[in-house]
Image 1 (cartoon, rainbow, N blue to C red):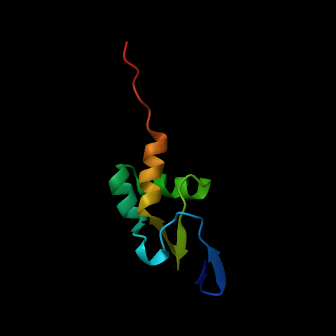
Image 2: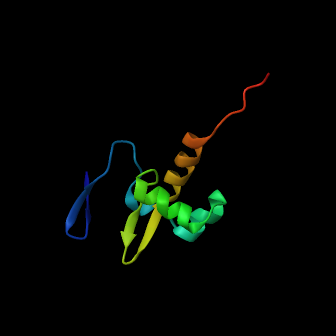
Image 3: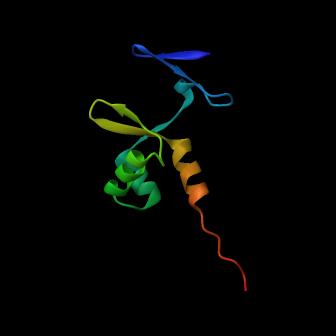
Length: 80
């Protein structure tokens, strides 16, 4: 079912939560969670590694996307 976002239609992929249930974080909050600088978060957003929506002049990042990004970036240490 498409969701109306302003004058555009945003089609949600199967299995995603409805937009009214999504928790969005600011760039500063994401930087705090990831323990990186805000500039690093901006780079992740601009490179496409971290999805975000633009609200006015700032970005909002879905909390689940932050967790998925961290999970995908995890580097395990192999035991000797």
